[in-house]
Length: 118
Image (cartoon, rainbow, N blue to C red; front, side, top):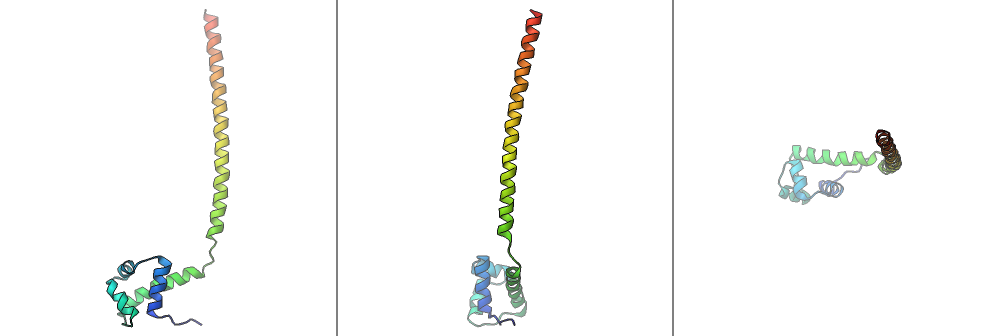
């Protein structure tokens, strides 16, 4: 059974969850910040404004009901990033070693060419 939530509670919960000021919430709804203050004190908002406030509140409640496995996903991504970074670093080492070998072979070749021509 859903508990009835007052307008004041909705405002507080939205501001808390979204880390919004009165000014930002008022902007999202399309009213002046003073309207939020009046609503907290018991003034009834116009229906379109109430619907906007309620929609924001409901969207936050819906998000809370979705299982949050974000932390798990972040940990998996961190492991993959760490693995690929290690692989990349190993590849760079191999490429560096290969480049050194190529340069040594080129030098040896140049020496042989210069000795043959002398």
